[in-house]
Image (cartoon, rainbow, N blue to C red):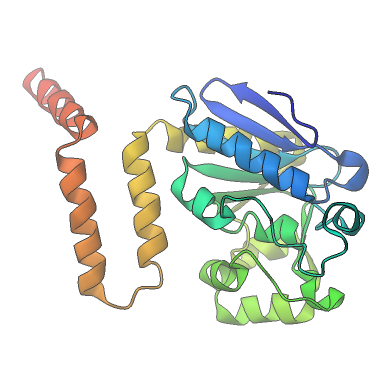
Length: 256
C-alpha cells in the first residue's frame, strides 16, 4: 500500500518502516500516526513478517510534533501532540510483534516518546535526544512518565524531563535511554539483524512475553506476577510451538 508520510520495505522476514518527511526532519503529524499504526497492524497480521524496524529518512529520526500540521488538521488544539488514531499507541506497540527503533538523527518530543515502549532502541552515533516538552510549556505524553523511568531510572528521567536538554548518543547510552550505539552506515542493518533475532522465535510466545513484561514491570505483588505467568504458561504448554520444540529436542537427543 502507498503511504504519504511513511515508506515501507520488507527485507525477508522484517518490515522496515521509514518516517518519510525528510524536508521537515520527519516531524510527527496525525497522518503519520495513522499510517504508522496501519503499517504495524498490517505487519502483525502478516505471517511472512516476524518483526518490525522503524527509522527515519534523511538527517533526522523525528523532530517532534509538526505544529503547522496540527493547526491545519486539528485546528491548533494544544493537546494535538497526542496521537488521535482509534488504536491506542501503547497498546499497539506492547501487543504487536517485536519492534525495534533505528534512531538515525534527532529524536525530539513525541519523536522520542513514541519509541520508548519499543522492544529495543538502537541509535546512530549522530543521534540526538530531547524530551523538550517543558520548553514548549507542555508535559510529556504517550505514557513516557512511566516508560522513561523504567528505562533510565527516576533520577535521569527527572533530569531529562525537567531540563528539556538535548543529549547526544553517548550520553543516551550511558543512562540507558538507548540500548546500543552504532555508526550511521551500520544502523539499519544492525536494527534489522536484532529484529530478525527476535522474530525468528514463535509469534504467540513473543506476544505473551511482551504482555507479561508490560503487566508485571511495575507490579509489586509477586503472587500476582506468578499467577499471570502461570496463566500464560498453561497456554504455552499446549501450544503447537511448544510441542514442536519438544519433538525437535527429543529427536536431537536420540540421534546424538
